[in-house]
Image (cartoon, rainbow, N blue to C red; front, top):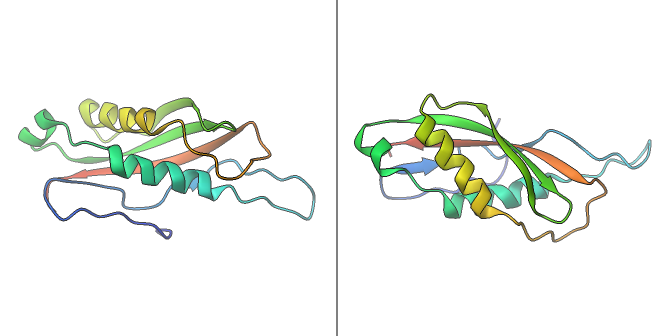
Length: 130
């Protein structure tokens, strides 16, 4: 089930983000209060959508796929870690996706977060069809 934001591009080849990131770790400051840090993942997702590139060699070789990344964002907006949670099947696409996340950070932290780190699951699709 895809959450709210879904950037699209009109011209091929398309590098899409089919579903918004999901937050893996949530901060829970008290028994009755849950803090929602989903905006961190959405902020990262928007930045990656602006910065992602379809590698020329992958495009020329017809390589497509969906890579799922795990990004750990520190409370100051800097990237602590990015890794491939599920490969697209093509190393060049996986590497390009991780590079887009690295370029997207540091994020502007518009709200303070109560945890030292937030873990975000970020799906990125590389498709030549659209």
